[in-house]
Image 1: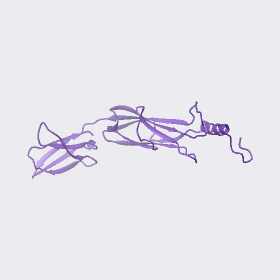
Image 2: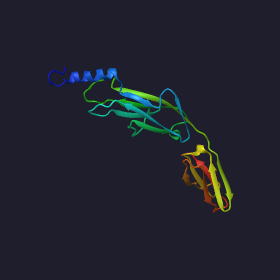
Image 3: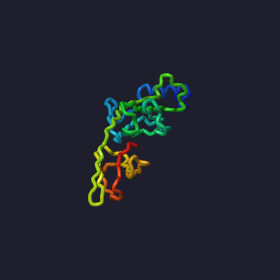
Image 4: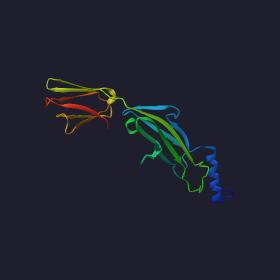
Length: 190
């Protein structure tokens, strides 16, 4: 094969790469573990990651899929998904890692490919909204599961249009000036 400074031939190079991948897998570790269902309520998120082998001459190709559909632009070793981004049910999120080295021309056994799949359940939980008018102000509060929702208002009902006020984060309330005696509020799922 490689003797006295002579480089490997194409056949030997291909067999060497395949024999290495016969002993190790392209994906070394994952986080979090893939054996439990991850539950995401509303805008809650989780970062899924793979740690793959690192050849010195090139990087491995990483692709992410949700329910067997490729996620456009998701080619990093870390993929963050939110409950709102998935349909309500248990979803499959998969990372596929492939060594695309030019040293291997044919890989019928697919030893240069590896995949891990997480089960992620998206659960919708309706938040509660409360508005109290006092001293020329409106104090609006909501439950903690409203993170990611959009607070909107209108001054007519039925509304000709809802006006976005704020995309909710970790805060649980806001105080606004009471400029209109008839103001309606709602939380909209993005």
